Length: 367
Ligand code: F6P
Image (cartoon, rainbow, N blue to C red):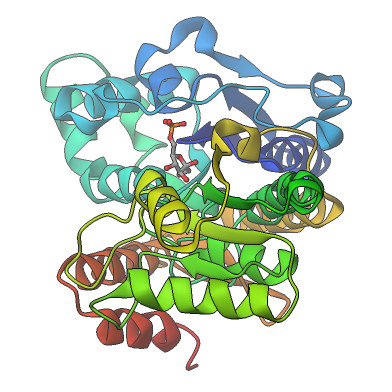
């Protein structure tokens, strides 16, 4: 009888609860015992009551609840060897032989490190007398499966991450609200959205709300003098009859020289050069809140079913999988490859090689 642990980790994302629910319900229906690990990797490190067996009713109402009801954390302890050793011991003590992790790129990187160390961790626990050779036997073939939950949509190897579309809806609602007041006063608004390394939310929100100008980290303005280019566009739109000006800025937006483009700077430019009455709105964590949209409930559900299936069909010779989406199909690929590609994209952006970053992002879909 398989004993599956499910945890959510990193920044919460709407739809994570759909994941937990589907792992619990589908896992039980397939004859497995399912355990929720509360508070992300921290719960794995702390063990005890943070690891609880779930039953059919444990997840009642989960589909429509935003965030993650089993808690999450950006856990420092799991980044240390001692923390991971403790986590391995807790898994063995609870008899959990498979772990499904729903989280963003940092969380899945953690899962990948844990995977690569697993055998060594078991040996270390045996040598230290913390577990017995017999206890370790069942766990030699521990399976770890990743599901991507992140509002940023910044993971390679999948078209879309759980929570991104809900956050995009939240942003659009907020921009629509700003629009009415902007129109009333004929004002300009500079709106900051989340996304430290990935401009997906800013770009999609800009298209969906008809923003005048968008700033994202991956594609800094090609023009050295982005201030003038932005003003030209905003002025032209005004000349064509627009009563409002909306600029959407990803929090990690950069200029050509990789200096951050900040909302207050944009506000000053619009006020000083175009004489526009300008306000700044930083959407902050409102973007992560609220009930998941239908898409994220479905995404969380179908991917979690695939994750449980991956656990049930796992074998020691198969690499640990990450569940993704490509062309509307649920995909399974080596977790290690997706993590590696995500880091390569981030490195390319950091070293200003934007063309390479775009090529790498595209390369994941070639086959
Ligand atoms: O990774 C998701 C995210 O929401 C980012 O877009 C944002 O930069 C970050 O998390 C904020 O993190 P925290 O909630 O820890 O402040």
